[in-house]
Length: 374
Image 1 (cartoon, helix red, strand yellow):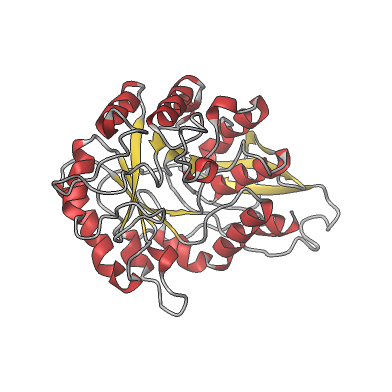
Image 2 (cartoon, one colour; image 1 turned 180 degrees about the horizontal axis):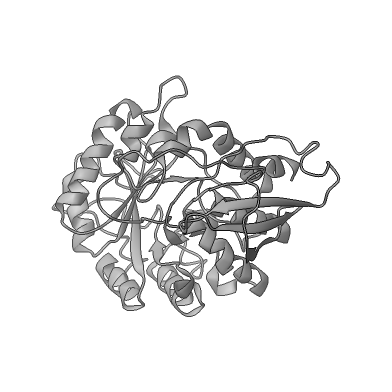
């Protein structure tokens, strides 16, 4: 917990934004639900029909999100990750879902999600195969983006397996152009920087001008050390990451694992608080059908969500990396952080307990900007 406390130690406002992807979408960080971390690539519907990647799973998650207060709080995307596909394309070269697990097709599923007042997202890969071994979009990029548009897709996640990363500066922008050419507004999430070799300079500005959001670090796991590693990486690389983020373009530290198995209650509140201060996408990966009330309250905390969804879209910066002698001394049980909001001079006072577990908005009044400033 001490490492995350040092990361949560604070932020100053950043400079002006650079030009972003011009599709007018996700002007605040996207919110929704994504299948991967909780359900992975479970295709065994015979033995595990409740938890396999299937039409049933996404319909049930959409129903829970529409009726459980999540839609009203701002969660709107239901997103399928890998393993929804058939193992091969059809005779005409078009993508098709697995016919047993998605018997009514993706257009039916998309229409159902839309009927609940939500939006539908889908996964593919820039290479010849997805990471799970299903058909990728290589050689079919324009055709597949049109297929997604025809299906009524609202959000596309494009992974980076089975493709030479040296081709990414060409192929990822090409896909973005094909998305725009369909005429359908579709959020473009890419994993471009995640696969670039460590000895190669990552073209961050180009990425932020191509994609609406992008992953820069490894997959989140249902483990507190995973959260710490991700938070450390974002703090260590903040001078590069903060200037490229803002309305319509977001650094994506991966999914919220609130309501899963391994995190304590306090650790789950820590993730929600930190992701919100980082202006990160809030994409849950949990089982909404069996979500315990205390975890639901974390995910629906309107005050924390308001921090995430502030219209300025400024990502937090760490300005101290140690709590030694911080504020009133190393033994103090509270830390104060400030958030500069889109209302200009208004500053909200927020207290975080030692474990960063309780993020509570108090009454408005200005205080010195010595913790987090967004």
